[in-house]
Length: 565
Image 1 (cartoon, one colour):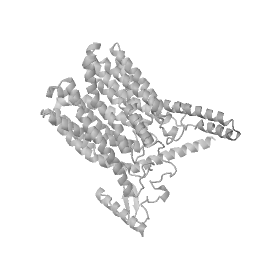
Image 2 (cartoon, helix red, strand yellow):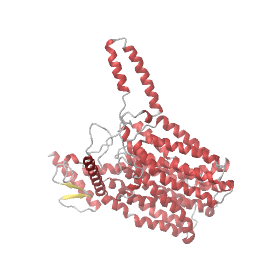
Image 3 (cartoon, rainbow, N blue to C red):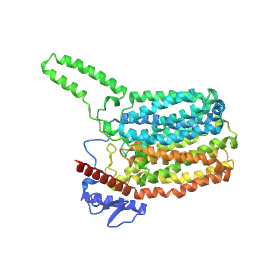
Image 4 (cartoon, rainbow, N blue to C red):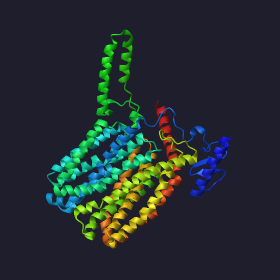
């Protein structure tokens, strides 16, 4: 009787959900590509045995062996590393006229240092992200930090334009991949059930960089000279590098599993190596003492062997083209293209500020830099709100499907509508962004009071960048084991479309005016927004098809190997 009442309650909730989603009902109710049978004693997938339910999780193993505060420290360290990429890209902008004058070249040539920076910013994570998914996060971080620090020292000492141009490419190569590595680290240690709140905080430094970078760059270049912007970046990069070397553990699941596998010494932090040394010293002293007693000798030797046992590192082939191959998957292509349009719109707004605020409102260079801060306020607000909202919506979908919610274990997302759980809460953000970005252009064209663009920037930070956060989380969810390569794919599209947006916004403004220029971006939002609905409707089916193709390739490979044998 109790089971029947429970089933009736679940079915009632499920019908209410379908009514809200405007979905048809039959004898077997449809939840996207998931079918729920009223006749079963629990909400399940039609045609699949109970052991195939999406809530199947090994009971004896948690997703991450790290403690709560260890996970928080790991995510914080990854977020600080990710802060270097946007900071590096934006801190340089206020000094462009000074750099051109000092190196005796035109502004057009100096702008090439920005173009090449963005090109390498889009391409480099394709290689580093794939390397990190295969060889580990710490080797990838080592490459990034060494390149970044060396390139910044070179930029600060560059004697001519050619040297600066080449070193800016290396600077971009070193900093760009830290964003992809950050998202990969989060996917390593945080389950999908609680990933929303953690990923929101990792996205915050990425968004603060474009706002704080121009402020710092303007002040430093004005009072210390443009070369000190690069010295500052070298110092910051060195501090972060030392912190990662001492305390940032290896998290790649192909190497340390859920964190309980002892990594090879090359993958250990300096803190772990120090603890190992102290532990071995203590064991040696205990063994010497144990040798005085015949009964304790064997125990001491056994403990010593156990403490130094090395676990074989799983092998995974490095595929540097993995990021490109992900672009041709249906779900990734749709998500990345629309997400790229959203990011490009944000960069168009930032570019228009630097170009027009001084002319319209008579602001100084430093004051223009400070005007980037309101968007930071919206970013901080959306970080606190949307992180909790994503976790709440995930729990809601678990409840509607009758799936037990456990934030310590990774849910099997093969048949779980993770696209709905993430993207449903993005729809209000997209509607807000569409309206605000249109109003933004007209507010500047008619020289609205300065408070108006400040408020609009807060709303744009909330809407545009909040959607970007949700997209990053979903990309990690649907690409388990390849979070680094997937984020690199996202980075490629974002950088390319953002480069296009920053290149065309000024000519477009001169041709049609600020108002109509941003109407174009609003129309793009409206035209491509059905992409969100398409992914929510077809995401589960697309992921099943991808898994079936992967299994067929695996079977064909096994068949070829057996024939060759």
